[in-house]
Image 1 (cartoon, helix red, strand yellow):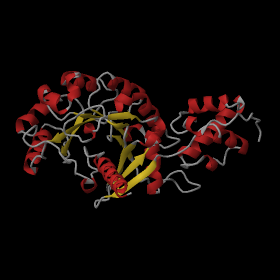
Image 2: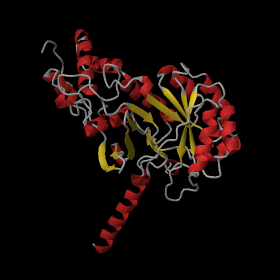
Image 3: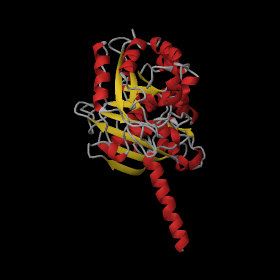
Image 4: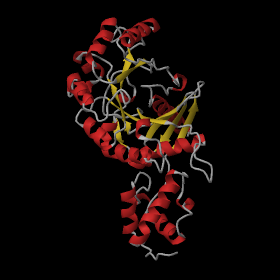
Length: 386
């Protein structure tokens, strides 16, 4: 080894910081703090970055480009681990859902949606959700905690592990199964701003995971003050969970609207950096029978977003146990889409994917609740017979 390092006392495993999710400056600070000479830091950061995000190293022992004594110091100082898979389901349409166990036993769900020309990974940013959107099952669970950068980024890396999506040894490129990442899983990502930002900046890095900022989409229910900040610090694609064109209805469907009404939300969207016809915002609009799906609603939506480079994703409501709504009839959805299309806005109807495994939009966390209830019943039965 060309550099000599002291060997600090190992840190207890539970107290070790995560290696995943650290940007290059943070990695450099970490290595310098471990006593690595300044002249060697830049090279070792590059080697670490390549091993973690190009080759997908899952254990510190796999960092074989680093000197052995540096690996030994890292093994006693930091941790490198993916979330644990507690369950995996594959839908009849090819959609995959992973139930992931995090530190402390918390559970989240991640979904991969394969399509002909792309593969979209839907990741979570919180355990549960602080919002209580009435059409979304995740919101009925309440917020447990925010995910850390390594837990957010770990969902992407774990999905690549499971899908065999890492480049072959000796190569960097090739077709990838995961082409897009959307922050549309459990949680409101702008209420976990710094952790989500740090993870997505690593994800977008062209010399690492390499997804690119346009292929990362953050979906928010409308945390207005954080929208311009997100654009300035990450410049990823943006999606808005709109779902209503009148404040009184959106107050009911998306209670956050009572704090940040539609006019304030749209003002923040209009100011989003780099918004153009080539870089459009997506408005998500769940179709609820007899609630928000009339022709008048469609015309009001067109008027509301006039002048914003946008597309409107119409989402057939995906039912979950106890949900208070029904999905709009197909003819109604088509009529709604036609009005929006005639106004010059693309309005694709999002084909429901993974409904049979409760992996569709708005359904995440349902299966987790079922599994926990089933486990409680099993344990109660064992106690009664024991």
